[in-house]
Image (cartoon, rainbow, N blue to C red; front, side):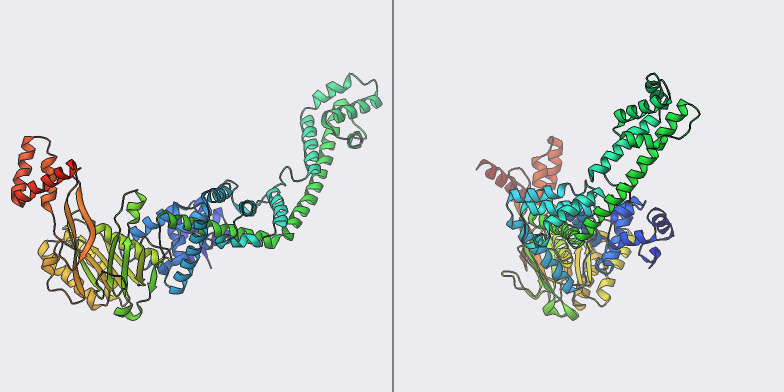
Length: 589
């Protein structure tokens, strides 16, 4: 396989990768989802991520049928990645994609939930110790040595269950020796590190001192010449001086002395250069011996080293996912296949669901229960394939739609979801359309081109559409939305449609229902007070009187207040006054 055979790798990118990494190394980096290697070779991080996502799960990405669905996917992955405990884990989490095979989804869920339980079982101190064991992993620049040291550190913490179980089978003694050897053996084939062998360190130190003297032979000549009366005495004085200054044995110094020399200066220079050459040969010989011994130690523990590398990588990814799941109290969804579009198999149902976006922002979230399709949730109508969601402005309809999208997406990725319970049927296309306020004809056309083909493509589709009426005039919007709901039902798809035009959609198909979210007034702080739990089979209504009441109360001067009071008369002065009185009474009591 050539680099150009990978999605997104054109001639320019392939050329840069070949120049920096070489063909084989670049292919290995792509297959290993090593984004750092690609970025280091000059590929932008965004492009590297897109390439690797396609390699890891190209078919799964096809699930994301619209731009807004892809945006939710990117946001979810970014949130998951923020819990990574190593750069390697971040690389792997960054390229998580939806899966197309139920068995693969269940397998990832099994692994993730096992990691969640293992992490949940640890006390806070043990968790911190585990994170500390990983804290030096990236600073050690990764590699086998870092993996071995991290594995040994995790063993010292004493974790052995669940995701940590592979650590128990490692031979700690062999691994410790291999760790020392690996740290001394640089992966780039350079020199053996200092500290690996005392004799090698001594020879290197001797060589360094001799090389320093050889760089300044005149100073050596001056120190020796005054104490020598003849050639024999000069030789003795030079040997003593070099030995005293460097620690090299006198015999070695004498052996390096030339048989003949034209003068004393040449004699000193040749002696020092010869001694340096001899010491360099001894250093090289000793280093070769030490390298062989170190490599033998690694080879002896090869199985344990490989197991440690794999275990540390796997644990890093699984602990990262566990931290993400526990941070938001995510639960395992129940999956159904929805094979053949059969109504009995198609469902998206959530009990006590919460928006990841709001949770991540630290907002106090009201859990919401909602469902379409055939499900087992109590107090929620079952069998309706389409929900038409209506209600108050700022009432949480869009947030509920996004939450449903997050639940469906996470379930398809084989990850737990932000709900107490969830039933999710696997689909081929996830259509999510956010409200885009524009009457531009191009926007209407592009929207229809993105949301209709998934319904007519023959696969299973989930439709999540927000305020379709925002892209064309209300009359046409109602007709188009009614057609879209009808098409969703005819194609045995599931759908939730947020709209303010529900009354204009009658008559709806039998398996579609209207639900409503209601605002209940203003809080003492004049914030809109909303019950975010939809009321099933009930048409919600907009609450302009609540908004106008707030504007009246917050008016900056008399003229502004008079203007808002005109609007209050338009929406109902009694309702506005009652709203303000209720808010005041609540504040006083």
